[in-house]
Image (cartoon, rainbow, N blue to C red; front, side, top):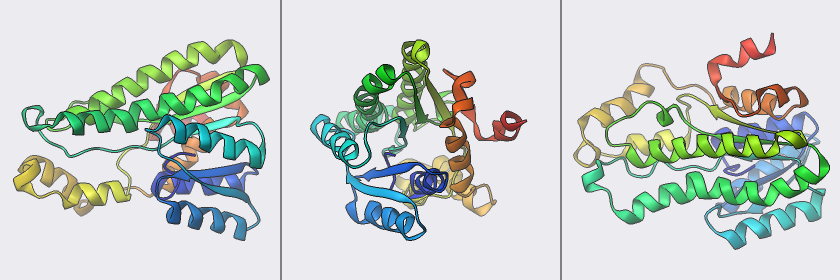
Length: 248
């Protein structure tokens, strides 16, 4: 579980552990993942905290090695780590900022999937869930890096699905919606002079008009996509609103 120290990642880690999974809670901020792992263990679940920078190839390899040493091979991977970057027009975006968004949102998922896929294929079972965003399909001025990176993640999801299909490895994506997370809090902190009045109003409007949803809601969808019945959804990117229909 990347990005497991807070928000959607922490909620999903708790839900998967409650369902009997042994969970590696991974993120850069060690204090956060340690707190989540301790909370899971306190209620009888199995969890370890794993320091992880998804943009670093060596860190990803070390995280998987640590996880395998504790729990054995990784059968489920949730690529949840992500960043919106600083929402600026393309003309004002620094190359380093553009690359950082792609490194976290796309390359991180690639590196983790590359580590996980060989065992999943050899074991003839696996689940990979990539947490994407509707920004992949709905362009917003000032969000070029974020939207383009999530569109790339969606395509990576589809390609991985094709590569895993013959081996019962189901790869899906999730559009979680507008969720009450620290990422949203950080987005609201950007001033209108930096990101423009339109984006500033949008980020604040999500909160002010009660549009933010709790992270437990997308966690339920992600958990469902980790289950055996998710094989039929291989290659699909699922919106949060579709969860109830999927269960019918």
